[in-house]
Length: 385
View 1 (cartoon, one colour):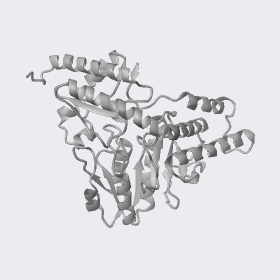
View 2: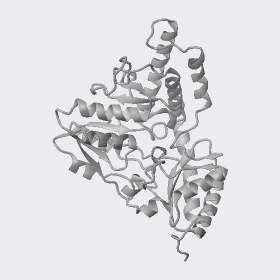
View 3: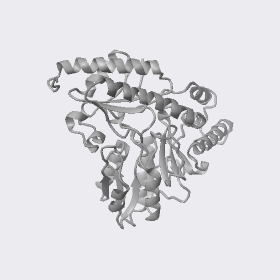
View 4: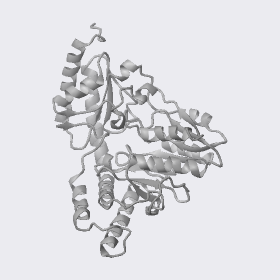
């Protein structure tokens, strides 16, 4: 298998798995208990909090652990919305957010909140001028993702944060795709809240974190035993938390090397496809994008067919977000950058990881070229020149 769907999930690193094992078998205590097994779990959790904080330039006490990016997004967005609703009920987001943000905002609209969805342009990036125009006296929250999960484009988060700070508006950033792949410093980015998910940076599934800037108050949306400052109540997933922390520790050490390696492979993949397949296009900005994230579209064919034929060749890719892959409607991200439905259906996302190599990239290019030719030969949508 040539695995190129790392934006959907990434394989757990061996070192991560090894540090998790003791907390699954021997040190299995509940961190809320007072006897030795519980104290061991508590110490492990607090050490983990430090490692997660270090990766994003935060303080340990500003980190809470969650079940993943979706819970983090919900706690942040709903928590701010309900806490500050007496001040105003207006939220600003973008038209290309992950479903965890889009659907949360839609839910709040049903509760009487007003949401402005900023447009993006051909490159998939918002304009600061549009953001400024959208701000109203009732605006209490801006929530914009750092990097898009489908087309990899990176938003001007630091500038957005400056605007938010100037207008005394809370700023949440979905950092699920960016943390561990590009430099993320919550202070330089001017964010009040930042969501993290372990399985996007070679940690386990089912665990994540939320950075909450000191002094930022949230209204709880979940209720239970009071864990994680009452915001993510329930017995802590100690093996997962330890795994997340180890993944963050490794990511911090390897960030620069990984960035260079993945960018080089990404460029070879982009050039190899665009130079060898007619009417093939790159979706999103070429420069301001995550290392390793590539999203193509091919005129006259459907992306689902490409994915299935690649799978038959032992290559894993996708047509877009794994969280939306069961929906037959065109990608909201690709529609937002101006693509017609037909072009949106002809898209393929490949996201490269550190276990991939140049030989695999060359193989993938050759297979895509062959598959596109085969599909076009059968497609009534393809007009031969």
